[in-house]
Amino acid sequence: MSSKSPKGIQPPASSKPVVAPAPSVNRTILYKAVASGDLRPMVTFTLKDPQGSPVVPPFFGIADSGADGSMFPMAVMDDLGITQADCEERGQLGADGAGKYYAWNGGKLSANFYGVTVDLNMHFSRTPFILLGRSDFFAMFKVSFNQRSLRFTIQNY
Image (cartoon, rainbow, N blue to C red; front, side, top):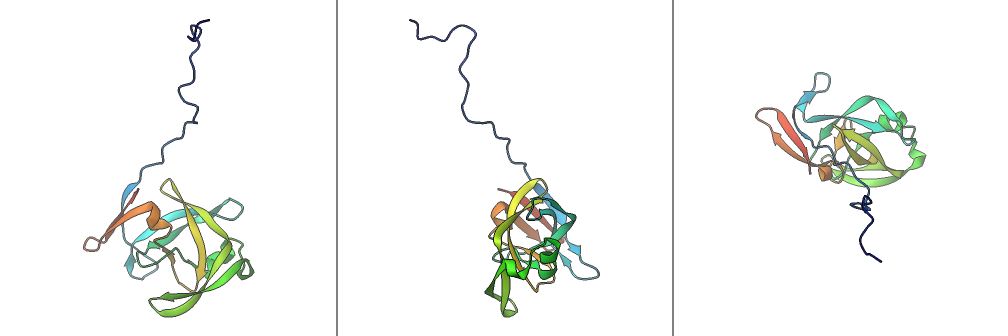
């Protein structure tokens, strides 16, 4: 018996499934203002609700290197069909002192930033803006600020 494969039959090159590479993001973005407010480093993104359906319209969030994790206004809780009863109340210490926030018991939801999916912590508080923080957004993206030109750059790792 020959140990060679029969002619024309080749073993598979790999038994591992082919995985598409993650999209590459290297985007410079102008600061934006909400209403007539100050210019801020705002990122546009889409978010999926707990059932996996996209929430429309897209959201704007501030890339906030001072935020431990992402934080959403209480009104977004309603947009997602989440109630305070679905969350655990927790204490927090922020720039304005001690406060509280609500951590969704369901964990994280998927968000899409320029083709890159990020699982964001679903934390809600009395913040007026969505804050994109270090434990999820900054863990996926390297962010550089150019305050003089009012631009910032995000790159995925």
